[in-house]
Length: 213
Ligand code: C5P
Image (cartoon, rainbow, N blue to C red; front, side, top):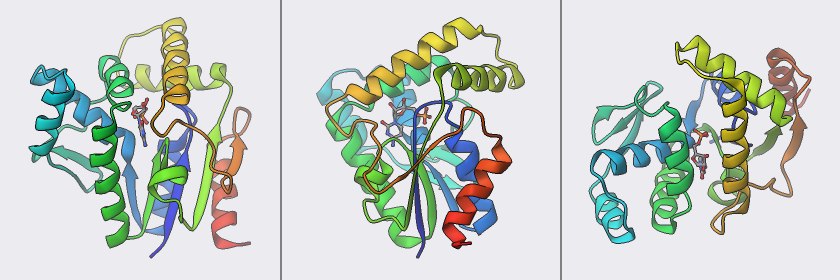
């Protein structure tokens, strides 16, 4: 079984690269951010906000990945979780210990059953501490905001660069300073600032590390 952990902040290219890497290696791609987003979506839909409400909601929640789509309680929510509102709420809800415990258990179970490229914020430090390969990707906030802006425009979502930059800075702060599993590089992860690197070079770099050539 092969496990590859990719961590980094929003807009660092980790989702795109994890997906490409998984395709190239013919193994499963697991987007853990999508799982936090799915929990955030359910808490909005059911208006569950308090710790106790969230605890009982979690005991009655299933999350699955099938053919690259994420299913919340057997419903495909892949498109519903990509709004700015859910981005913000996912960052807030991911601070809650019982949410992390539930999702980390699911993530570890998936990696026990199959080879994975798993990406998120705490994969190399918490979820898959013994991963075969660990990468920590980042880029300047300007580069990351521009990528996100373009991605949203491409998806037909109207937005502006300044507010994206503010939203990313806020999420960075939240993710890096929370008590539970903050976003940090694992000691044994390979650090890569890809501000001035194109996707292909970044992918080739990672493949070289993995294939050892
Ligand atoms: O990666 P993405 O931006 O979709 O993640 C949404 C939010 O979920 C992040 O801002 C972060 O707060 C949270 N998250 C996390 N741990 C992970 C993946 C995501 O806390 N492993």
